[in-house]
Length: 167
Length: 317
Ligand SMILES: Cc1cc2nc3c(=O)[nH]c(=O)nc-3n(C[C@H](O)[C@H](O)[C@H](O)COP(=O)(O)OP(=O)(O)OC[C@H]3O[C@@H](n4cnc5c(N)ncnc54)[C@H](O)[C@@H]3O)c2cc1C
Ligand code: SF4
Ligand code: FES
Ligand code: FES
Image (cartoon, rainbow over all chains, first blue to last red):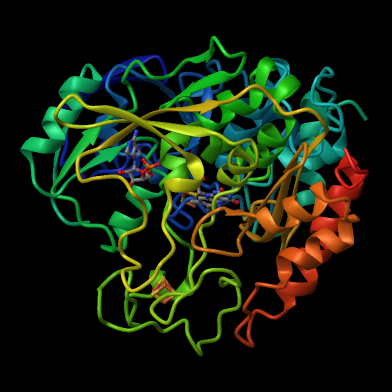
């Protein structure tokens, strides 16, 4: 089935078996291996990409449903040699060990910071009508959809804090 | 995944016609439950009708002073909505306690209601399950899995409904708007959407084949405080092992039955002046634990009483 979307700013057209997930289309059909397959069931966040600016799990989304969407993967965040500020913060804070979860963590952070900027609340937000303040507790809760099997959480938290938190 | 064909309708009428024309068709919304189950071949639709782009993505005021949540509004969208946060905080909390940021961005109002159980044996295709294969038996009964029902279970199935959102909607007396393939439309209380398992646990809702949910309507918020609290095995990104929604004098319990469990005995006791603990005791009197899930008795009694105390619902309003 023919499907076209914008991938990291470039037009992409594919002829896909409808069973193909967005994650498999990115990795297998388009050769972008940055997005990782951890669980393939929405349970780990390694496959997180941005669709129209919002973070989703690419493993649970059929590629043919993304007709006309704007998709950004870890490969599309930097501007040439200039890293995205979240990428730079992860490097600076040494926010990874094996690095397998890192593309998902970074894409998820970019999406999460936008959600916070848009005033979205989280479960640990005491006053649902107040402005969003990205405390450490807020960052942890909002990033709970990204697991790190190396448990680099303290450094991931530090990186996100420096990229957009308050403390 | 088994092979299937895929179509994207432009409006509800077209979606209903597409589904009616293809036996084995299913509606696809966010896909976070359906695609997952298709990968495991627990779901095997032959045709997918993608409803995610239908013009049902609005949150509108109703003339009665409530809100209509279109079927394809995302969980994130509803939880972030200023009107929902101000008037239905229990619903915002319930949604935000579910899944992850990524999943909530895809998950929809209708898809969330119609997500299937997380019973471990339903997912384990090497074990018998009456939901997957009617008549096969139930591996959860006597199995080593404790997140099962204490209310309304049957000898055929002891699974629970896993949604957080639906529990808050139940306490809020939400109604579900439904459209059918022959142009008919109807609305039912949310409490009438999900069925108890009985002898046919594979029939989970009262939707007729080919029917589609088009919206969930919230009546004006009840007087009194609201809260949603969830107990689970880790602090975030885990399904409930028990949850409680309170909205005014209305109480619903999650992860205890095949459907969001409206705690009418507790409500009646409260209305009669019972304390939070007494009200929960009245509800738990009809609970039937099975030896593996006995922990839910104390858990629900305490969680429920705590919620009723916090909201002041036991203060004889
Ligand atoms: C790792 C993980 C953790 C999760 N944790 C939680 C949690 O803690 N709490 C919680 O509540 N949920 C949790 N979920 C479940 C999640 O909330 C559901 O998967 C989601 O809400 C389903 O919505 P969807 O739009 O993606 O539905 P889909 O997967 O698209 O569809 C689900 C079902 O609804 C049907 N359907 C969809 N739209 C319509 C319609 N308009 N009319 C008729 N039928 C329709 C489909 O045919 C399908 O049968 C979790 C999921 C995952 C993967
Ligand atoms: S409890 Fe229900 S879902 Fe679980 S194995 Fe038994 S029949 Fe299947
Ligand atoms: S690979 Fe998608 S969430 Fe794990
Ligand atoms: S750095 Fe190894 S999984 Fe996170």
